[in-house]
Amino acid sequence: MRTVVTGANRGIGLELVRQLQARGDTVEACVRDRGSAAALAALAGDRVRIHAVDVTVPATVRAFADALGDAAIDTVFNVAGSYGGPTQSLGQMAQDLALGDVAATFDINAMGPLRMTLALLPHVRRGATKKLVHVTSGMGSIADNTSGGYYAYRMSKAALDMMSKSLAVDLLREQIISVVINPGWVQTDMGGPHAPTPVADSVRGILRETDAATLADSGEFLDWKGGRLPW
Ligand SMILES: NC(=O)c1ccc[n+]([C@@H]2O[C@H](COP(=O)([O-])OP(=O)(O)OC[C@H]3O[C@@H](n4cnc5c(N)ncnc54)[C@H](OP(=O)(O)O)[C@@H]3O)[C@@H](O)[C@H]2O)c1
Image (cartoon, rainbow, N blue to C red):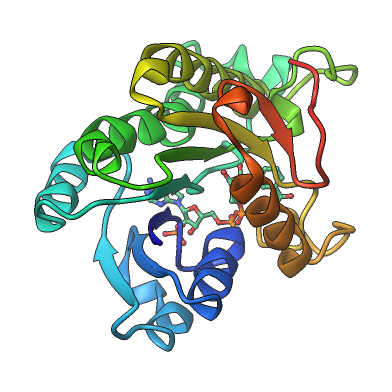
């Protein structure tokens, strides 16, 4: 299996690279800044190659796709994400109607995975498993939103979810699978120290659900523990 992972220098992305490499897969690991990828660099070799890709910069996404040549990619893991800026409450946002943090978070969390998908579709069409896996969040669920706030993050993940659904519809005839998956509340820089789930457990769940996903699951909202989450 040959895979692409974004956000591969830390957190869920880095652990995905570790587990994919350990089971014998080849990983094209994308990081925004090679300078902050020391842990990933330690894994680099024949089966883990590091690429500089900022998912908000189209030229870097295109250059990465070009560098892959006519290679087949089996699964793309869109992992890179941002929790949004510190001003996501109603009161704070009212001070800046430019909504710069909201736009920046959309660019990373929703437009970034769309850019990656568009650039890599030719490679995925040549792949064997043909899977697009976008890491979303329970905070993107409208049905599950009982506490409000976090506008930038919640809105961007809900947009990502809709992107995945449209991809599933548009790519059904080509038998390309598109799913979003909730990784749980995970012990990473983003999840913080109080998160209950070790990153290795979350990633084992993500891989188990990814491997099990068939065309019948395309367009669904998967959960790392199995089952489905409500939209
Ligand atoms: N941790 C949780 O509890 C949790 C819960 C639900 C969903 N998620 C989702 O899971 C994914 C991974 O989260 P995490 O916990 O591993 O977060 P993390 O530890 O904060 O890592 C975020 C990753 O995204 C990368 N990134 C951010 N902006 C980027 C850009 N413009 N281009 C390329 N890479 C970029 C970061 O690179 P830099 O190091 O260069 O910043 C880093 O590798 C995210 O999509 C997040 O929303 C996490």
